[in-house]
Image (cartoon, rainbow, N blue to C red; front, side, top):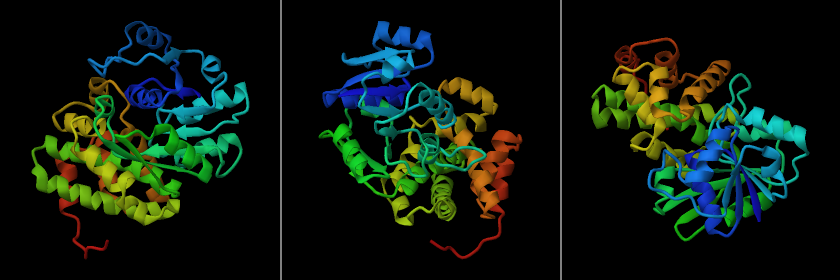
Length: 332
């Protein structure tokens, strides 16, 4: 099968490699012509040193070329880029093939999860062509063929089955889950908690603090998940606790590194520039705060992270404010 792959970042390269191992022809699209030229020439991504992109994966800056003859569209752009990219595609021709989303986020102002954004563009509340792939995973480990387990979901069981067949390998295991909202919500929210954990580590607060942030962060995620009609049990799985752990604990995590760089004195913009790739928690932090305030749900870790990034709050003051909150009985 020919697969149109939107986005040519590290995660896109990693997943395209999995698809290629399963025998599919991949055409990856990037709007940046210079990036396409370099990837074609070197067969290497600058953020994946030493990894050679397999033959059978091509690159283009012409989205029509990428779409032509494709049986599936896979997406790895950014959460903020989802709407403009799919609006651009929908103007070219009607989308009549399955769409698999791998970005993680919540759209600002609308509070929509990414499958909801794409469904809206395609003309339905829960469009049967839309599915997702999420879970604890870093491109740097996937391209090294290290064992990885993810979750796939979709509005249509046949699309869940398709995603499972497309991506499953002996070491890249895909678990089906029919709770699309829960799968996507956990993947979006964990990025905010990872920024907070990076800040705490950068300030030298230690593992006890980080464990508390992760645990209370999960509680915060579960409280807010109610407004998106998620199954709370989904957040106990790979796309919830699993993704939270890998993002808060790994040196590969952009969100964790972003928080740590801020704690070490860089501005949010300086930290983003140093990382050189999208830091999804920066965008989603705004969306989650909007959602929580709209529904009057307290999310203190998200609020503190927002204040550090967007209001210039001193990280130490933010941690002090969290530690001096009134203690209530722990409800899980």
